[in-house]
Length: 383
Image (cartoon, rainbow, N blue to C red):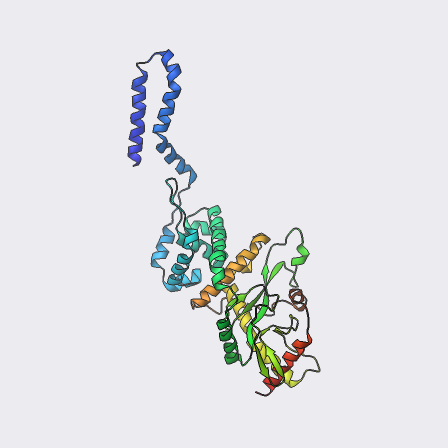
């Protein structure tokens, strides 16, 4: 095809030269501009083919094609946090919004490369320059692709994988907490974790934490399987109004938190372990702590899989929530697909947010909450 374009251009030029030798100077003054336009139009395809060489710097994508065809499931898991089949399934779900039209001037990147670039960035936190060399695409293209895929993940997958459980799901969660940790009427466990960021120019003091770093707090509720079902908890309207009758009163559905959170009718926290604490209260605290550990393990897996969350200082504050949300969605997606996780990679340091930071998240204290906690304390003391 390229040879035919060149031959056509040469032919047009030869015809023009042959035509010009028979014309007078006066005729050429009037007809030469028109003749030049005809030559340009006839050779336009060749011109554009030359321009295409300027638009796109040739890069090799052999590395990607080699690994996509030869990597084992284990290698996929170590680098993209999911097996080959799960990766292909994810690409299929995102394909409707990630497919680009193939034009005559440039060939679009495949959906698989786009998703892999984003996962590589989120899983390894590798700089864009290194990812660019690996996948054979430009640095600015890597940055654009990552943001596009994150947006599509939040658009397509978030409503599917990060949502309030259905009544049937709530029943499963409640029964699982009772079976695993003997704790009744539990719909989830809540905690918060710090996501490091670059200090915003406007209000840096609002993001300064007790560790001497700038961060945003990610509060989240997880179920018994370490899957997030809410990442912006602040009200109890998400819980069904189900109660269970105990000897000391009715107990509604509750979420388990630590000392950083206030005691609410729907949010249980440990008894203060001061001098006046009773053995029954200590026993209640132990039972609550064992059941609540599921949320700390979930945060450990979240940050262990998606290490981008360990360092978001190079992202604008407006993008932090999008990246965090996408990582939570991908975490749930991997858990739903039963993807393996190496426990030794990263563990949440525990403790979540401190008391003062936790009080910023939720405020209030109710007598009804005291009654529910006392009823649960009595329940555990008589087991």
